[in-house]
Amino acid sequence: MSDEVKPAGRETYDDRPFVLNPRNLPPEVQAPLGAFKGATPPSPQWFKDAIAQQPERTFVESLGARLEVLTWGEIGKPGLLFAHGNSAHADWWSFIAPFFAGDFRVAAFSLAGMGGSDWRERYAVADFAQDAETVARAAGLHADGGKPIYVGHSFGGGLVISTAASHPDQMRAAIVIDTGFGPPPPAVAKRKAEADAARNIPDDRPNRVYPTIEEALARFRLMPPQPTENTFIVDFIARRSLMRAPLPAGETAPDGSGQGWSWRFDPRMWAKLERNAILDTKAPGDLEVPLAHIYGDKSLIIDFLRRGHLGDFPPGVIEVEIPDCHHHVMIDQPLALVAALRALLAGCRPNGAA
Figure 1 (cartoon, rainbow, N blue to C red):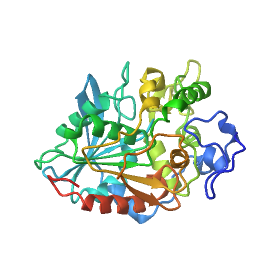
Figure 2 (cartoon, helix red, strand yellow; figure 1 turned 90 degrees about the vertical axis):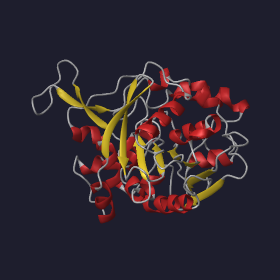
Figure 3 (cartoon, rainbow, N blue to C red; figure 1 turned 180 degrees about the horizontal axis):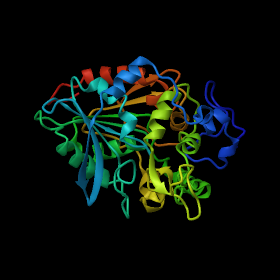
């Protein structure tokens, strides 16, 4: 762990997207749900009301894979497409998206290899553009006669801005949330070596199968690791990150079955991903579509960006800082994120430019 002094308000532990020794993390960061022993944490009424607006769940085929798609709102309204971060899933937006269903036709989808979407033999950054357009068309996000607005968090934000640069015809505007880009060229080799040495979590080993959901929930943590007071959101996300899976030979679950619980993402995604494309990615100097960036004031990823360890955003990007917030903005300050998104979307006229 570095002896470098961290800026005030940020964490003193190593919260890079990979962790050499997770056991060095504080208990509330290493296992935020451990203390609940499988019970669901209490939640406020706004959250209950939001998740009660359950989406329609469908699948769309793109590039040979079935992609999980969640939709809210009426077809014919302006389109809004949400993309999640690495090893996450579409339900990361299930308590955010309903706030926009009155004014937009909203869709969130699980990236290939994550959530309920199919795994692929190969993952490429460029495939996201096709996947996103296929989902947008199938979900009716173009039905108003215009192009949808893309919103992406973290890894998903990087994919959104890559698509904005390569396929600006697909979107009306782009909003990215706490998103960093590959480091400047001199640092690429060093960062790649660090990532390889750390075996970026999730790594290439098979996902573990836990005999009970309680044990699985106790092992869930955010990546990059961070503290959070909103454990009810972490619990909601964690439960939807799990699927039933056969236990290893010779093991039996307490219910007498041979089924346990495992994570819903391809554990070999990073091995099958064109990682050099990720490491080399830099924000383009000019974009044809309007771009805004929402970020947490305590995010170490943003700190890396400001200290020159990551590539720069293009000039003129609108930036909105959310106070008292780490990398996972929708977990730390969900209502502030909704407010920030509403303000930005208010500047986007249907069928026009932002």
